[in-house]
Length: 317
Image (tube, rainbow, N blue to C red):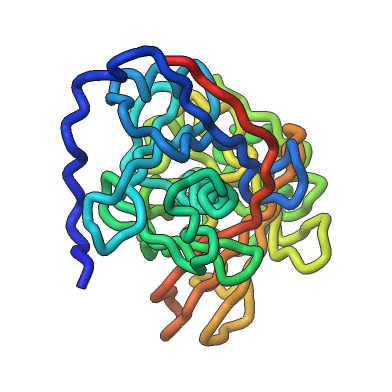
């Protein structure tokens, strides 16, 4: 039975013995259209790269994340994957895991090209094994069940941070910290028009929400542009250097749990959500969430979306 303990990546202190090219694929995640969604660079064979070079490459490409694929540490798994932002290595994230599985499934040049026919890949990542299911066009991965934190005591301040008034917030729904891997302050907005009017007031955020247990803002409304979508959201994380993100899968599980907790959706054993995000910054995204409910609380979550191949390139190291 595969181990659930976090892997220990082999020491890779030396770089390539001589200059050589490394090929990567560009994938847009959480979208069906090129140049939408959340972009990702995937190096499908990163053997020979050390940590310093991977970080420098991620900084050079400057995507939100870049992934590097190696042979598995646990031979019961398919690959090991290391994830880098331009500034640091990340333990795990759904967006890069899903995009990496998609890129591998389309990389016929891989010696292990048989992976392209598999409906499930298991990656060794820094946080532990991560499974990505590719049974349908929507690839999914499991997300930790979110935890509810404190309610923000001044909803009028939360509205002001977004350049909104109290009349623009959804009545009867709290402004509250909810999160799993990252803590988000969920701010319920009454209408799509109000959500689209949001302009983040950094001066107010610096004095107020920045000091709260959940400084990253996820504002949402229960209206959407596309048929079948549950809600539209916008994410602002100045504490992470993100002015606004096109797709925030780490916030979608918390949003699903919030909707279930406060009965903003009808109770049922199994929920399917679709959340829109990113249109305001020119990268529309659609993130899918499946949630299992028991006694009014979420017990299981899967996050997913579609991907599209945008291009490929070569880095010389």
